[in-house]
Amino acid sequence: MTFQTLKQNYVKGLLETKAILVKSIKEEPFTLRSGKKSYMFLDHSKLATSPKGYKTFIDTIQYLLDETYKNKNFILCNVDSKISAQMVGSVAYNLNKPQIIYKSDALVTVEKGPKRQMTGDPEWDLPVAIPDDVATGSDGTAKRVGDLVKETFPKVEDIHIFVGFIREIKKTTYKMHYIITRKELLDIVWSSLKPEQQQAIEKERNTKN
Image (cartoon, rainbow, N blue to C red):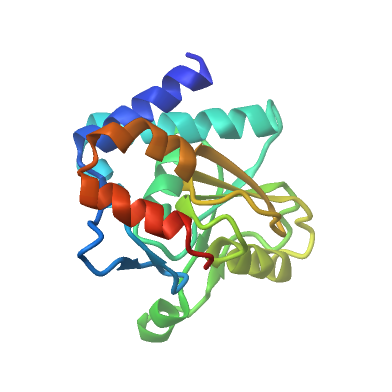
């Protein structure tokens, strides 16, 4: 299956599960994890409630991984987001890949076990892939996890980030791979948006964050 077909299936899954949320100009915008405001939000939790929709997402992420690493071995690592750990678990199972298990500061604080933030073999020296659902386009949560990977596994030199949706393409510390950009997705859904939703998006486009 081609990347374009996989991409179309992924977008279809987002639409069918109503995972693309757009507020009107009369509403308060969403507050993103980065702290920025946006009238558009992708809820991959809704996509994950659909076996078919979730499969299209994972299949497309796996395509990006295959294109990047070809036949080379690599390790997966999650970030602290609502869907990343599920993504990593699914891909690791499908492709029979090892995982670095990352836990947030909050989870490490409350857990009863050894309180490790990164679980894996300290001698690992393979490339590390960090999948997540969305990215702003600049360094964020995944970059901080990437830094911690390099600190915890000093033999790891190659780290890449893989996401479904990217808001804006910018230069990042670790190379970013994505399925679809904000502009591409808006072009697809634009005609289905109500006038007040379109006004909200136009306002956001004209506002420098």
